[in-house]
Image 1: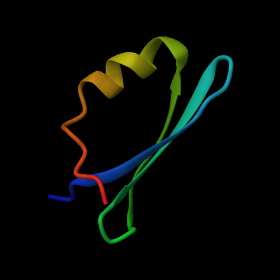
Image 2: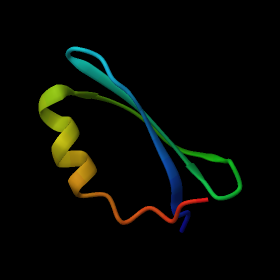
Image 3: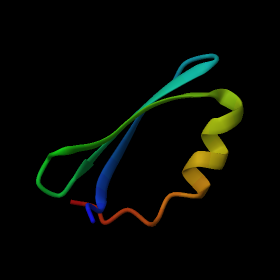
Image 4: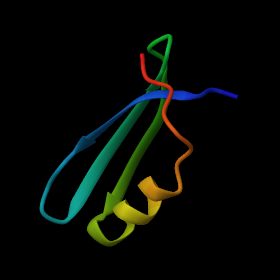
Length: 51
């Protein structure tokens, strides 16, 4: 299973773009979420490994 090392969030008023990469720089997450869903999604992520 790929563990996410970095999570980038493009902040906007209503819709947020998420981009996650693993320790090798491979994209493992691309997601678009509404403001309401962002906090719930991030709270349910496993801890990030960091680079």
